[in-house]
Image (cartoon, rainbow, N blue to C red):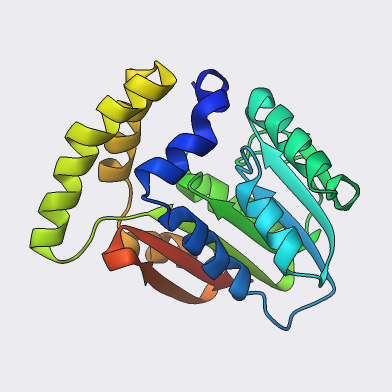
Length: 223
């Protein structure tokens, strides 16, 4: 599915989030202020928007690895890194985030934007993230959530169920992918439950930063 929608993926991300995805990624990068030097892993890196934002705004990143299960997405990411002069600072790996080809305690930071709800088992993926982090390492996970406010939630669900699949179908030609987007957001763990999953995986000092009335959240935890 992600191979199919790769050519229009960036455009639809920016359009469907009304441009808020830029600010959400910047918020993730600000969590690394003052840290370094870092060996960073970006999971579900896709076309590389978060990876590129991190590399541009965090000079403390000494080495970055982007991992995604879609080779077509990685092709687009590779080209974007080349155009922005960042290709020498990043390695791209095609693999499953729930079974990573990395040794234990390999990274200082692991980031993941809008990817963990697409894995077959979120708990297993969190366990893998915990495994590859160094002691004291940090996980930063940006994911969609549902607003707490009932009126805002009602409006948001109407948008997800009606507007998103229609726009997605018109631009990408793949209505199923953008119907899946709605279903995966509605069916995913909400902030309290996901925070509990992180704690069960071993993370401590777990915190949640709600974004844009709660339509997305940043989850932060330490090994």
